[in-house]
Length: 105
Image (cartoon, rainbow, N blue to C red; front, side, top):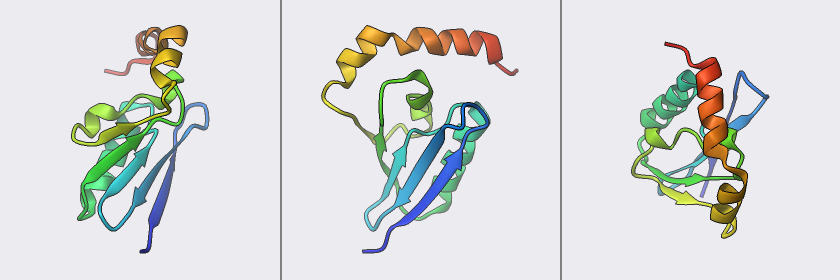
């Protein structure tokens, strides 16, 4: 099996996202921060012939949990402690703060 890997770098925080094209479908890793970045990754995935099957959360920080709306049929994968880390660190509050400060209409 041959894998094709593409790395995308965000314009903020030097955060990276990954797309792994496998024989059965696509694995997406931390899909972007800004709306145009998420849209670029979605567009790239849609250009291929395989569906987005999985979306991996590498960790619970807010800048790594955005983008899922672009891949509604992909299964989410995370460490079993992910829900606890989300509750303790409240990344959704950070997302709201970020959105209020940087939202581009």
